[in-house]
Image (cartoon, rainbow, N blue to C red; front, top):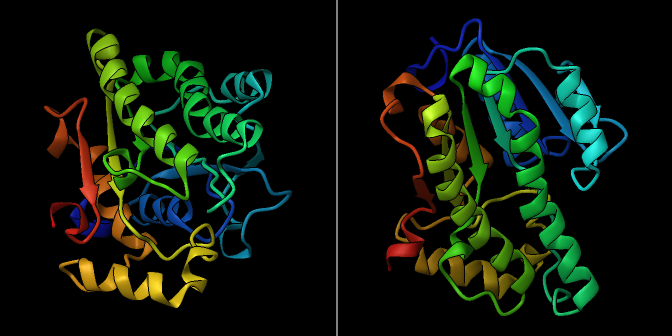
Length: 240
């Protein structure tokens, strides 16, 4: 049995956006530990050295032709995890950059879901999108990120309804404050770090591995009657 008691022996899993140390990489490692065959993508030329054993495709999720080419090279898929995202704290009011964030975080999620829909319909598989607790909060220093992640949560609901008849389940998780390369810039602000710890009932920032368990659950038979759900994984931050 793998992480949290789930077994994915024989399953084919693709994690979009897993080239750096962070949530995507942790999810890929957890599926592999549970027995799945896992492939990953990212925008970097190479993945993190710790993940160099995974089949890797350098992928720009804003390039529909590239996404479709990867789909064409993937004859079977059971689980698609959409984790590609960018943010830049304090820089997202600029309209051009705002549009880029939305294009990657939201439209990139849609491009990948659409491209792999035939494989997922054939396997009666599932999509798991990575949203954010900012789907439900105002985000004054990350307005594009917050808007895009709120839209990812809404997209999850819409695709869950649209594709249910094909046997495809579509769910999401909404991480809170997680220690990743992407959050490194915000963690340079000691006051911000302390404020997050003080507000979070569990008293700490999350680790990428804290997100992997809920993702494995959503992809499992234990969640076979769940679709359109978005599970908060934030240490209780969103309920305070």
